[in-house]
Length: 446
Image 1 (cartoon, rainbow, N blue to C red):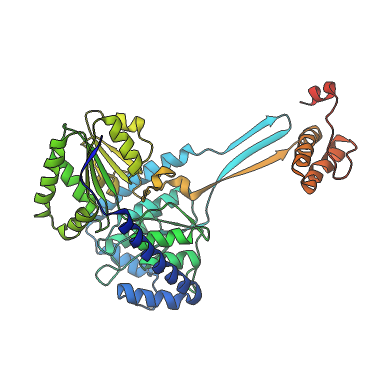
Image 2 (image 1 turned 180 degrees about the vertical axis):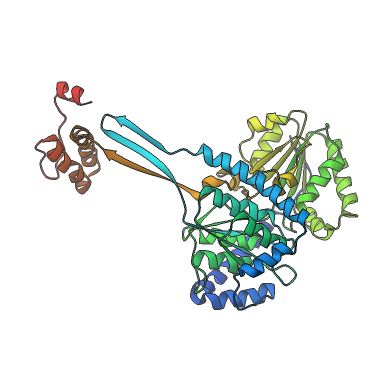
C-alpha cells in the first residue's frame, strides 16, 4: 500500500481555482468576439502594459531581433530546430495515403490533408520560452500548413528577441507580439486586422489553456496544455540530489506546476525532500519553484514497480521521468503519460528545449486520451470512395437498400435503389427494399 509523505493541494481548492479561471476567460472571449481589435488592445494594455499601432511585427523588426542575438545564439537555435524538424519529418513520413480496391469495382482511400491555417501560441511572460516556437511553428510547417500565425507576449516591455528569431527561423508567416487570452482569442475568432485560423496549438498558463478549451469547436486545438506537470519515478539506483534537481527544474515554470516524486525507496524519498529544501536556498528561480513545491509537490512511496505503474497511470502526468533499475519496464507497461524520459542520462529539460521530441504535451489528466503535439495534429485524414463498375454499384446498392429499410430511412434507401435500378437493371419499388439476388446470381456477383 502506497504512502504519501507529502500531498499537494486539496482537490476542492483546485476546482475552485479552475472555476474562477473559467469564468474570467468566458467574459474576455465574449469581449473579443464583440469588439475585435479594440478589445485586444484594451486587454494587452491591461495585462501586459503593451500598446502599439499594430501588434504584427514588421520584417525590419523581425530582422532586428535576429541581428540582436549572438552568432552562438543563432547556432544553438538552429541546432535545436534541426532536431525538432528531423523528428517531425520522420513522423510525417510515417503518415501514408491509402487507396485500395476492397471488392471488385469499389475503391476506398484516404488522404492526409494539412489544415490551411494554424495559430501557434508561444508563452513568454515570465521567461522567453523560444523552444515553443520550434515545437509549434516548425512542426506545422513540416506538416504542410500554408499559413502559420504565431503570437508571444512582450518580455520586459518589448518583443523577446530570442522568441521572434525562433519564430522567424521556424518559418512563421505572421508574427504578433501579443500574449494571453487576447492572443489566442484573436487568432481563433479573428479581428479586423487578424484573419482567423483553423487550429490553435501551443502551451500556456491556466488562462491560455482554458481559452483554448472554450474555443474548441470554433477551431481545432492540439490538446489541453496547461501549467507544467512533472512526475519523477525513481528507485535506489539514483540519489536525492538528482531527483530534487529534476523536480525543481519543472516547478520553476510557475506556482501552479505540480512536481511529484514516486519511488519504492522511503530513504530516497526523504533524501529528496531534504535536497529540495537545500536547493531552494540557492536556486535563482526559487521564489516561484518554492510556491509550486509547497502547494502542489507530492512524495509517494510505493511497494513495487507494479504499484508505481498503477499510481503513475492514475496521475497521467505531462512529463514522466523514469530513473530506475529497469526504465523500459515503464515504457512497456505505462499507458497514461505525455512523454517518457527513460534513464538518468536524459531529462525533461532535454525534451523541453532541444532533443527533438515535442514539448507541447497533455496536462490535467488529458494524457488518458491524447498524446502530445506532433505533425499529425495538423493533418486531417480524409476518406474518399469511387465505384468503377455498374455491377459493383448495384451490388453495394442492394445491401444498402435493405439496411436503410431496417433503419426506416426511405430517402437514404432511394439513393441506393435508384442505382440498383439504373446500374443493376432491377425493378425496386419506390421507397422499398431491394430483394436479394437468387443464390447462384449473388455468389457470382460477390
